[in-house]
Amino acid sequence: MATEIQITKVLNGLGQFPGCTSCGCRIRFGDQECPRCGEDLYDELWAWAEALIDVVTDQED
Ligand SMILES: [Zn+2]
Image 1 (cartoon, rainbow, N blue to C red):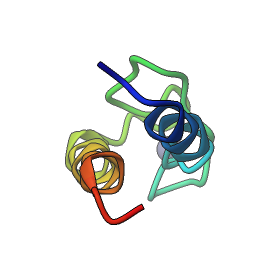
Image 2: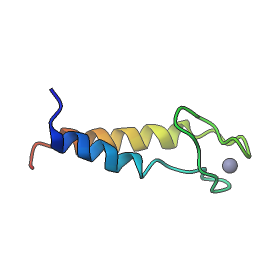
Image 3: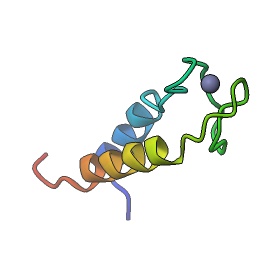
Image 4: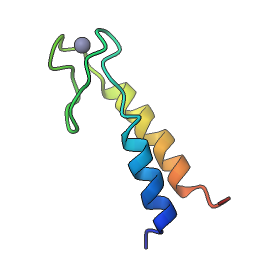
């Protein structure tokens, strides 16, 4: 069961969704490549999701 704190952390994390590392273009949710330059962002998305899950599952607070 998700707690309010966890939900808040997810919503905050969505604001840190990475842009294109190549041209800086903001990407839409669900995209795994840049709509402008075609850069593959899968690795960046993976790292973002991994970090977010660490934050959400952190039981310290
Ligand atoms: Zn790009």
